[in-house]
Length: 608
Image 1 (cartoon, rainbow, N blue to C red):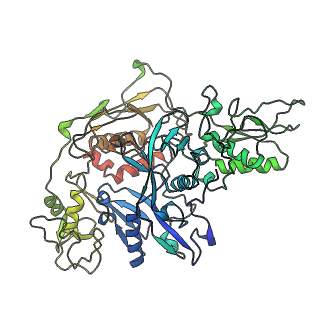
Image 2: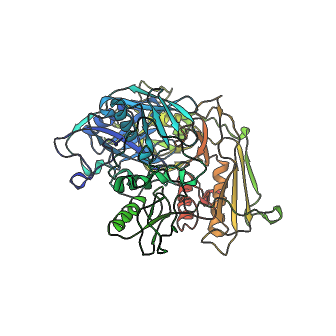
Image 3: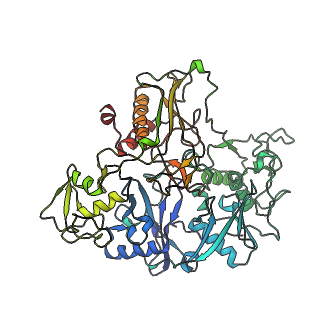
């Protein structure tokens, strides 16, 4: 089945915007930590479009139309979403789709996660599913999009081709997304191809494979639709791994057709041997071209190897570039073989207890958080007044929380009532000098952790000691007699985090409900040098303030009420850097110090 027109921003007129006088459905999307664009709901998109028409450089308060998005604000000038209680910023974009596609009709496809909640598919996948549904196909193979799933419309289910596990899915009607005609200013779109500000797609953040973005933007191969769905892969052969191999097999299908036996019904070749076999010998003793397990032709030339170090798109050779290079070389009669990198080395060699030593300059080897440390109760009004000074004659400018003028009453008037806080009162934060309605700051604080600290929504300055919602657990740290890549002359600091399952407290999303803790204990690594020990000391402070983890919904698995990382990146890959979360990485220590500073954890604070 051919894939319908995607929602990726096509380079029209060199900018990535629709041409003049062409109607398009507008879908606003935000970039998650796995480098995937997730759509806002149609209601939120209509709200953003209305604000955009009034002020293209203003801010959008998402909580005005969706109670679950109260902490979030979109700055239209910088095209970023800001979460007021944590300070987290994420890129957003204004994307365009055909009016006849699923978002133009208000159709949403969703899958059921382990907690029984429904999660919407990415918009391009939603459009693909709806297109197959409208054509009355009995099933849909998502391997052409890079996913190991089959969609069965008769039973309305999704099946994992590797594990055979099934999940329910549903199609529901919602409000249609807004329509627009013509182009938009350049400042109102996330820059096409920009690399700055992109979150990493690493082992920590990316726990499953996603299709490379570059491959998605290539014209998809025409896939034949058989009368029955494809059979599950043969797990006895490493060639059946999915989805990485599917991308290369799709290239072979698109440009060479069915050149050998064993063609997969989805258009992907089913290989009988290993994923890549560069030493297939011909008559003259020269290797053949190997593409997806097939010998396409013989040649007296040696086969040059084109290494693709990471088929997720994060390696030095992008999969799309590697694939197109192979196509061009083959068209010129030159053989080529794509090679897959080895698996990442996540853990060091075994270490005996006698070889484990304390970290010099860091007292102890363990830190624990207990339930008695977890709760702090502060009156919101008292906290706000502690850090603000009253302003008698405020300037005639916007309050960036409620977007009302400072000379008028707060936008939370009638929504939030606090004794002694009049809606027209305005205050100035003492250190940074930014001004807001007192009632707006009270509302912002009440929607956060309520730990006695306050963070300026404009400059992110932190007032007081910021703490998080990390559940109880244990942090261990010690030296092991092994060196990290790039630090050959130093030993390694190993950090072990262990958090058990438990019951959520009053500061968590669902108090009284059980939460899960997947993948613990988690091992992380630092070099045993001056800067590495500095990072360790600050991580200990962040742990004690409950900032390393939080309880939320996993964007990878869709599981809700589970322990997830909380904006401070760790190196979880010991002996390689294939995932982007290992060593060598010359900028990592500086980057994590900056992340800790953004959470209010600095060396000066740690010494205090």
